[in-house]
Amino acid sequence: MSGFSAFRLLREALRGQSGWGPQWRSPEQPQPAYDVVIIGGGGHGLATAYYLAKEHRVGRIAVLEKGWIGGGNTGRNTTIIRSNYLFPESAALYDHAVQLWEGLSQELNYNVMFSPRGVLMLAHNVHDEQSFRRHVHANRLAGVDNEWLDAEACRAFCPPLDIAQQRYPVLGGALQRRGGVARHDAVAWGYARAASALGVDIIQNCEVTGISRGADGAVNSLATTKGEIRVGKVGVVAAGSTSLVMAMAGVRMPLESFPLQALVSEPVKPVFPCVVMSNTVHAYISQSDKGELVIGAGTDQYPSYSQAGGVQILSHTLEAICELFPMFRRMRMLRSWGGIVDTTSDRSPIIGLTPVPGLFVNCGWGTGGFKATPGSGHVFAATIARAEPHPIAAPFSLDRFATGRLIDEAAAAAVAH
Amino acid sequence: MVLIHCPWCGDRAELEFRHCGEAHLVRPADPAALDDAQWAEYLAFRDNPRGWARERWRHVHGCGRFFNALRHTLTDRFAATYKPGEAWPEPPA
Image 1 (tube, chains in turn cyan, orange):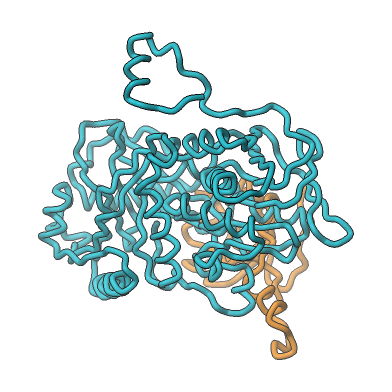
Image 2 (tube, chains in turn brown, yellow; image 1 turned 90 degrees about the vertical axis):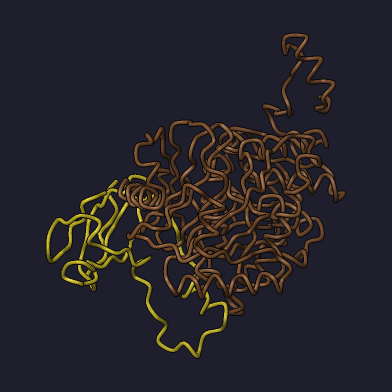
């Protein structure tokens, strides 16, 4: 496997594109033993494996994926990237990710199509406005860009937005210009390719069915559908299925899993220049480079593992989209889907050590994990390698539910991600 | 949208109800006697099963009363709903 370059693109153009091979190794069978095994081959798991291989000397690494890489929430989200969270701990974590996003295509030699086109969060009432202005001030104190736009400035930034309609009046919005979108599949593929080049084994169609612990209590082997694997350390990055995987090691988690839905329209020419989110009416929208409008809806009200949600949730979101952007009333929707998101009671993730020696967990990203992919993998890799929390990850420990040091982004109106 | 059988009102649309989390959680009689980990267990840690789940629901846009339900979290099928204080039914085979 060789790198991508303008010269290589030109050469392949002249050779009928016949020289491209597989971009990563995907061995059918795992080795009998690894020093570190990551359970879950989504963006976060692959990023973790990549940074482990690149920045830490931990020996042999494998990523085990029940289905195919990037087939879970990595391929099901609305690809929004931003870091304008209220609390300093969150802003540090998500801004760490944004900084990595900015150089990620070069880092991986793979075009993840990161497009910082700006994320505009709309305020529809006085409470929204006060809350967002507070976010703007908190973000600027934390060194994260965020600015307040009045209604006219919102329309200038996003011309399709109807600020005069009566149903959901727009009082203004908070704009993070460094925010934007990226190509979700390319993130999984880029990390897989770069990790594979550094020697990481990516084992697909390999479900973990049991976690064994030795006499000292530490994890020592995994039972999988492709045989038993002896392990030194295990990182669980299984999103909606985290409770089920952790239960195999006898660990209960403060998580509940919900379906979160999204949908895309038929592709049209470029009409939508940015990302617009409305927490109050729970709709968010951007346009992919393929031309589809990408629309995010809310979670269902009850836990489910069905990867499909209630139709009334989608219809509520589309009503809001049609009110805010009347020009989209005649757009046809192509498809909708659900992903299973693992939520914590404070809506902040859990990254760190567990009561079981050698077992680490990265979960609880809820409805907004995609944006954190590079940062999450980077700090989790350091946490696994050193067996102590990375400074940015430290506040997001599992024991915060016992100490009471919650990072309550749920109360900070981060309804939508 | 699913139909949910309220033990008092009968079959109603899902929109009339609110899900209220895992059922049969009992508040510790003497919270001061617990350590932090035990209190966290009560407050935040949940079974989150894939399969049959025992849940608390409230008919919030109806009679307003709480009840419990046995629901499958992959199919959303309700096997039973029952009044508070009643023993939970066994999941279907």
